[in-house]
Image (cartoon, rainbow, N blue to C red; front, side, top):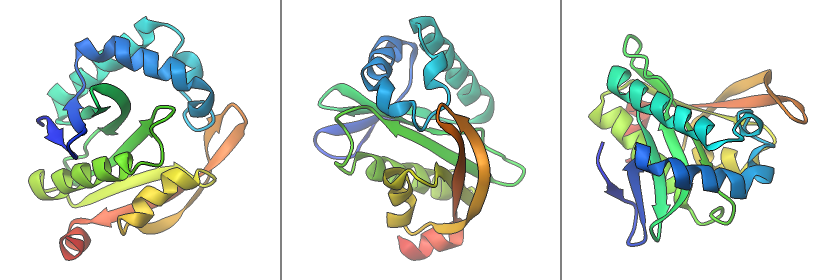
Length: 182
């Protein structure tokens, strides 16, 4: 992938080793809000943990074609969006994402998701994209809903978070559906 401008202030850039420090700082700044939705936040307490994440993302990109990108607004890291491991046999992928404190509610993630869905379905020629969100995370759920994803079901107690088990809403988009929505 390349650097992709979402608008005049915001770009997507593939995550690199140079992004470890700003990524760790964004996690630190957003820790209280992120921990309610993301299980890895409480175990990401040192910069070395973020460095390991970035190394893992780069390795997965090299081996599988997956991608993790930073969302940069006014040259500040605002969040992360990524393909989880691409299943080339079934031509499917899931997308994960999060925004740091102060960047929510501006349409950044919906714009980034549109780019990632378009790239997955049209450039990589995948058949299916999936997004899973905690059922109580209305902001996160709003993204696939605005984009026309189909709510395919609820997975009960799918993820253990600090406040207990969370149900996941599973949204899917097929390539043929995306072509009709474009």
